Image (cartoon, rainbow, N blue to C red; front, side, top):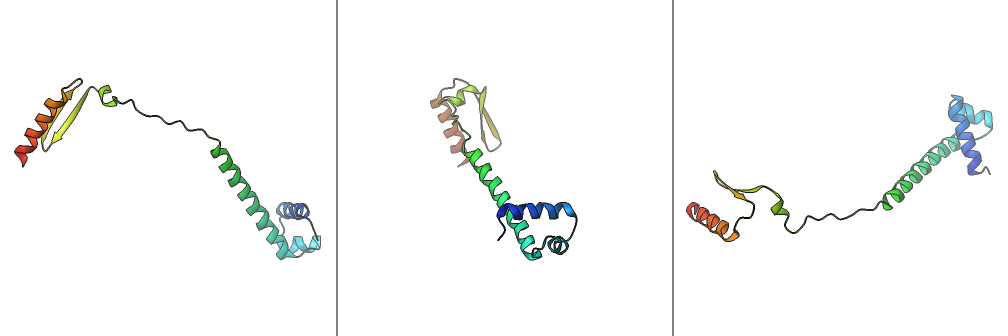
Length: 111
C-alpha cells in the first residue's frame, strides 16, 4: 500500500505530465480512479488546512472596544430637531428644560 507522500508525488507528476489520469496511471502501474481520488483528497486537505490557519490567525487578532465619551453630543456644533417641516437648531450648551418646553409646544400644536 502506497503512503500519502507517494500519492502526493504521483499526483504532482500527473499534474506536470499533461497526460490523462488513465495514461499516467498506466505508466506508473496504479489505478486511475485511485489517482483522481488522491488528487481530490490532497486538494481538499490543503484547502481545509488553509482555512484552519486563517481562523487561527483571526483568533489572535486583538480588538479594542472604543466608546464615545458620555458627553459625545456636546462635541457637535449644534443639534437639529425636525418636527414636520419645522427645523429647530440647538446650539452647544443649551438648556435642556427650555428645549423640552419647545418640543412639547411644537408637538401639542400638531395634536
